[in-house]
Amino acid sequence: MSAKNLQDVLDSAGNTVELLRNSQLGAYIYPVVPSEFTNFRREVIAWRETAVLYDQSHHMGNIFISGPDALRLITDTGINSTAKFPVDSAKQFVPVSPEGGVIGDGILFREAEEEFTFVGRAPVANWLLYKGGKGYNVDLKLDPRSPSRPYGKSVRREVWRFQIQGPNAWAVIEKLNGGPMEQVRFFRMGYMTIAGEKVRTLRHGMAGAPGLEIYGPYESYDRIRDAVLEAGREFGLEPCGARAYSCNTLESGWIPSPLPAIYTAPELQDYREWLPADGYEATNAIAGSFVSDKIEDYYTNPWELGYGSFVKFDHDFVGRSALEAIDPAVQRRKVTLAWNSEDVAKLLASPVGPQPGYQFFDLPNANYGSSNFDSVVDADGKIVGLSMFTGYSANERVALSLATVDPDVPVGAEVRVIWGEPDGGTRKTTVQPHEQFAVRAIVSPAPYSAVVRESYHEGWRSTAAR
Image (cartoon, rainbow, N blue to C red; front, side):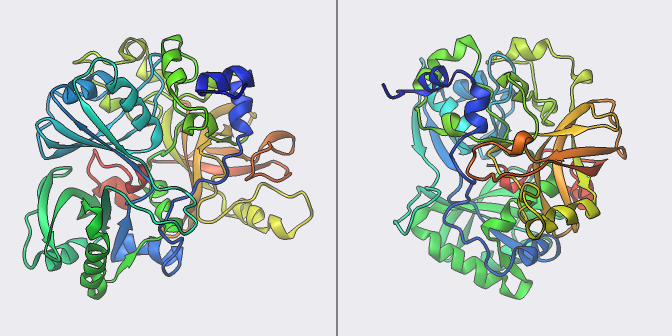
């Protein structure tokens, strides 16, 4: 009998870790947007030196939440306080499971008193849809992300979503606006008119300069995009392709795809029976050298991911008691690992060397699973952390990974990241037989970029976050 839901899939598999480590999902794809418009190095450098247009219209889902209980749903499911959440503002939203493990994150826009839009990846969207159907007086409408492989089919969304970012961004914005435009507070919303279309704005910021996220009805996608590119031409604005897009998270320090912590809590059996047998949670691919028989060892709590400041016990929410029992002082913390250039050169040379070689290190995004977990070890071979997102920054000219490490591992320490999976690798379609390689790396701040550390707003997170 074929599985009807996620719980059936887990029961049939027997071992959740083995199921997800051998997922046949394939590579994560940023859909529809071309991989490059010029080349990924030029596009990455543009957000540091001139300006860039991010197209976020396709790889994230939207949930439109409205009704008298909309705010209550958000309050009951998020670690964030909603005591102050004015209309025309946004928050990074983080829900956890009853066990305290992070399910995911995304951005919540408060469009009106009883109207919210959540923008993010599938795990949080699914959780909100499920919880919203449990006694809340709300209407929820899902606008799912575009298919990863549309194969020429017509793709349509409810809204388009762009960001104009970089040191020249505000000059582009004021040219589009036809004159000076007020720089509202960070993560506050407003309006502007572009090519005769009134669009919504969210104040953002990159490279120490103000920028905007803009969005509107999908019917105006081409007209708005063309207008932004035309206005940005004289300011060096570059459209950003899918290859460059994910590099931003390496510089800004946001870990984009933690494993949703929903596989084990007895209280979530009904949720697992609600989730489909072929959805994200059933096909999500775990990759990397860290291997445990317990799926709980792949869960992360808010402090490990850098969300500790979001946790507010001024309201009841799912997972509150589990988080209250955690001592933040002894939790792993988020860092950036700067990989040794000589070791990276060996990885890059491996495809032209003797077989089997090392696990392929792709540029600029080297991740080969949806949720990545590479063991970080000290000089004695003891695991002191997990490397969770890996790639190359053309701005920093270094390979980086975002990791969570034990609290006693200092900035400046040399560690090793075990690159590649044991025993020649799993059956994932992104893996071919290989040997493991211990890459030297220096524990560094997160965000890694000095520009980001010194200039970004405290609440800012990567544009690639969703």
